[in-house]
Length: 76
Image (cartoon, rainbow, N blue to C red; front, top):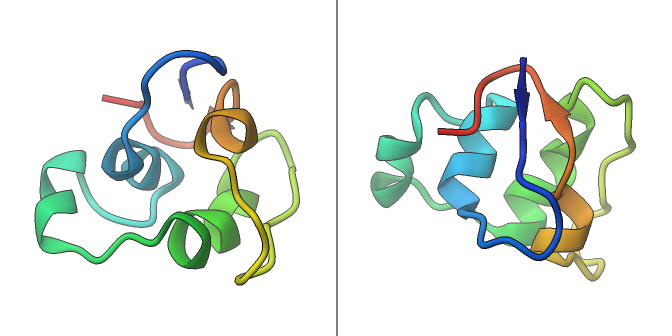
């Protein structure tokens, strides 16, 4: 189980996507279209903290919406 860094630190969309299991390995992020809301927001329910997804088209703040979440994969 992983943990996305707390709010206020720099976090990477590719690393968040990999931690949530939306892509395999954050190194693949460069070849993958990762939308803050359309990918990460709707996939946020994959965290192990049982938190709801963010509806696509809604406002999503990367640090505050994802910082501190426990995830099924490591944030690396």
